[in-house]
Length: 106
Image 1 (tube, one colour):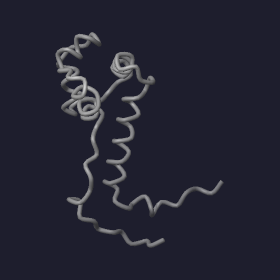
Image 2 (cartoon, helix red, strand yellow; image 1 turned 60 degrees about the vertical axis):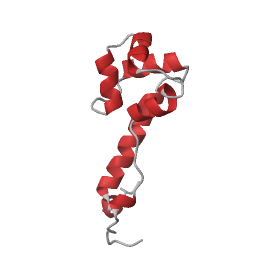
Image 3 (cartoon, helix red, strand yellow; image 1 turned 180 degrees about the vertical axis):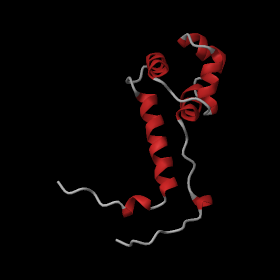
Image 4 (cartoon, helix red, strand yellow; image 1 turned 120 degrees about the vertical axis):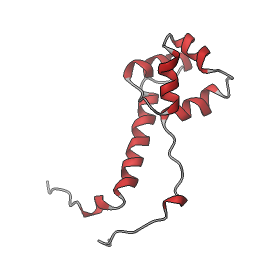
């Protein structure tokens, strides 16, 4: 494995959607749900839901439970989406630096 870091053109990288973006594209749009209707259905403040959609707030356990109950998904679904997006974003930001870390011997 090469020890040199590779510079990549980041404009070629695919966009990593956050949980709020996926909530809209995969659930709200197909069901023709607006933010107001969904917020009312899951009994949260519309501004809180909008902040998730905008990406300015993260999913917390309570919001995940409300959303997963409403959409009949497994608990933790939106938390896992968020964690996955954050890990992929962090890995991109490290841009090969992890390769220089030698795992500790057992």
